[in-house]
Length: 360
Image (tube, rainbow, N blue to C red; front, side, top):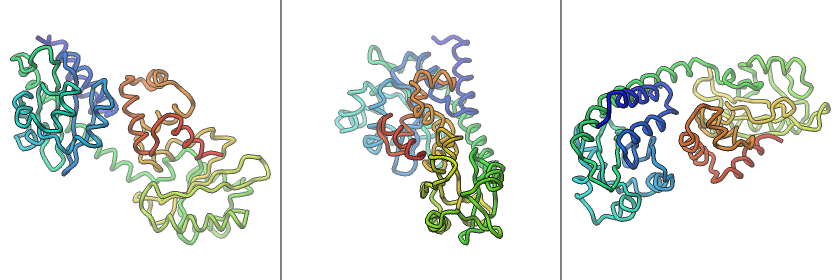
């Protein structure tokens, strides 16, 4: 039997995660602990594809295997997704629908995920399901457990609606922010003909004193003819593209330092006033690592994922990263896994090399 205080902790954790989505793993861990369960998770279904949105489970390999392969054969959630939102299902009943399947024999059983409670918590084309996997020592679907899950579902639905609303508000605010202003380093937008259309404060300072990055009659150019030709080609490419990961990186030699300036050129994006390129200039004597917003634009990282990536690049241990960002170790590991997927790296050494490649 879960006490009122424990129930309040679960509800508080879920609504905190609605405001700060990075904390969903922590919220699900609170629920898993209170239910003495093997795992808890939220699974997103978008058309034919299913993926673990957030989970509290010690075996990360199981979640990766689900996302990469087994999710498409999940007959349990397929049945849940056809039911009414909010209806809690007994896991044993659903598992019995196809016990000889590959999904059951190769994924559910080996990871002890073949009992628990399952519920569709959202309607619409993108379905979110809440999963609680019980331990095998005894059946999960006791009266107390099912009553508790039923009580949690409305709170979870409210939290997810709040998260969706806040995400929409943040997205609208982002659309009103010029892409150059989101970057800490000098950044400017340039039309295909090299006309400067916007500069942030750092770029204005750079253009006043730089001997390498210059303007003439409102047009951006580099003092080195060879580098300027490369810049023009990169801007022309970026002005025709829309994908955030289409980018060119130039190294511009300078007389005042043995380390060249690093110039990143990428599409300006939908928030710019007109099509063009976003040009970011990084001075390695000032910036010892890539600007966080550069990583976000290049690899579509969330703010927290970029923070974790940068700290890994500095050589910090995962536990230290968790302490510094005030996150659980499980959440940091989840962020790092997402960073690996988005940057096409597989281990910390590869990620560090990638970050170093963005700097001289």
